[in-house]
Image 1 (cartoon, rainbow, N blue to C red):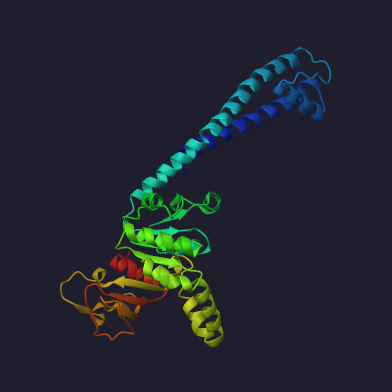
Image 2 (cartoon, one colour):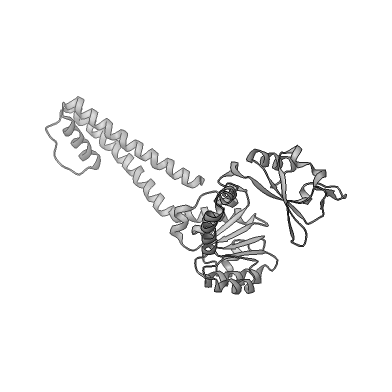
Length: 339
């Protein structure tokens, strides 16, 4: 929590506590000293604290008058303190928001090779959830302030603004970013973001959402490396549940639900060994060391091999894909310090 917000909350809680305390003391004082009913005691306390000037329920004796004098003096001090705290909070609310944004920007400025998510709708939130599970640094760009206020957390760095504007993209660190995910609901907006991003950072990986199939080729020409059509994927998934339901259910179980449910991992071979000698999948012996099984291989040219042979050489710039239970994946990550 922001220290300034915590400070003001503490002062507000203190003011509320003091107001409740003076109210209880006043009610008990009038009840004991003047033998008022509970309702009359509360009434006398309220009109005394607020100094509205209404008359007493019945005449006060000398002791009750002295008590009332001290009650008025104490209430004036406490009410003055409460009003001051509330006024300071209202006047400094904008300063608090500005301070929060500065702290957020400082965190974003420290990122390098991070991911930028444009749009925090359904697809954007799903992407953020998966990136959090993999502990990947990312920044969200969202122009709707209400959406950010509803879903933002300290774990999700954000930039408030329109992703179509170069200045907003630069604020999110696009010149240092590794990947951009454009998940805006409008295809024209996604196209503009892809064009802008590709002009600023020509080497980054760009993934864009598309609603219409006619937008697919346009986004590819604009510079998107991958274009995802959620409606097509959804329809294909539903049909697959009819044709091969058990297979789809098994694949769905490999999806990430949380940090403890990662069943599949992609690893660059450079993280597996430091020797200049080229190793094979058999040399790694991951099955014996971690329990994980190598189910795929991607060479430096982007070609995939499913269920590769044990004698396959792990050349630089290639990757292997391993499958295992969550605890096996965690053991693999800790053994090779994969992040």
